[in-house]
Amino acid sequence: MTPLQKLFLKSASRIGDSFCNVSLSEYSYWKAGGKAELVIVPKDFEQLKCALMKCNEENLPYLLVGCTSNLLFTDDIIKVPIIVMTKALNVIDYVEPNVVLVGSSVWVPKLARNLAEKGLKGVEHICGIPGTFGGLIYMNGGSLRRSISETLLSVKSLTPKGDTIERDVKDCNFSYRQSLFQKNSEIIVSAKMKLQSGVSKKIKRDMLAILRARSAKFPRKLPSCGSVFISNPKMYEEFGPPGMMIEKAGLKGFRRGGAQISEVHANFIVNNGQASSDDILYLIHLSRKAVFQRTGYLMDAEAHYVDSFGDLTPAHIIAELKYG
Ligand SMILES: Cc1cc2nc3c(=O)[nH]c(=O)nc-3n(C[C@H](O)[C@H](O)[C@H](O)COP(=O)(O)OP(=O)(O)OC[C@H]3O[C@@H](n4cnc5c(N)ncnc54)[C@H](O)[C@@H]3O)c2cc1C
Image (cartoon, rainbow, N blue to C red; front, side, top):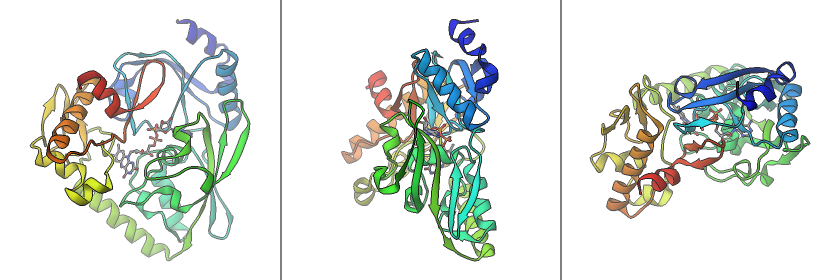
């Protein structure tokens, strides 16, 4: 047992379920990466706070994750505790007419279904996004060129010292796929959303149409992290979206090791079984370079790379450091 594992397993009952030497190629959404020395899954807010306090006491950095559907883990060992947010904060509370308080652990497609059931509309676009509500807010994610921040009223978060803060949405620095939470080390606890009244059956029909369109357009069977590159509005207007430009550069279907630029949609990199993170980084570099040569635009990755110390960096930056 490593010193880190010994340190945390002593407090296991207070911090939640703990797992040692977790294979990231089995655990992570993209099914790539090395091993995690320690994974902690707090089951409620108290356990989450205890895990955070334990890291503070020991002066240890930690990595916070949701479902890992936007993360690319190093092929090496992650030496800091990974705190998984899928269980601790699972509340959906209808607090006022059209106002819903949602915990950050809630699975996004479940939230969309729940709101549709109640006849609340405005976030149908999130119904196919495989992540936690906290991960969605952190990324200011969405689809059909929409973002979750459009419907938020406020976000509650936990500071590294263990204090809770509630910020009005205008103080969260949201912009396209960006948020304040990418710049501070706070843990998103919950958020309030304001929705519009609608007809449940119609909302469900609209969501079904969105899911069908996604199924037809995106690769469904092989692991990926969704769209690899963020669409740059200027490049979109002048040339087209990242997927189209990667395809025009002749890279659709291109393979490196077990990683492949999807044959279904070129802005997806799929794992055919044995992809390493380095294989994926190489394809990110290659796509970026090829699109730059054709358009003069450098595309930024939506996916974040996680290094051995749990530090997060947009994946294109690491791809360029390794292969540029
Ligand atoms: C098939 C597929 C389709 C996708 N389609 C879309 C799409 O249409 N639109 C879109 O926007 N994204 C899409 N994604 C990307 C991804 O699902 C989203 O970014 C999602 O919101 C990530 O949530 P997560 O819980 O998996 O977060 P993770 O990937 O685990 O983490 C992402 C980041 O959020 C941080 N984080 C997670 N929880 C918290 C918290 N509670 N507090 C603070 N920080 C936190 C993590 O530290 C990390 O930096 C897709 C991914 C896949 C695999």
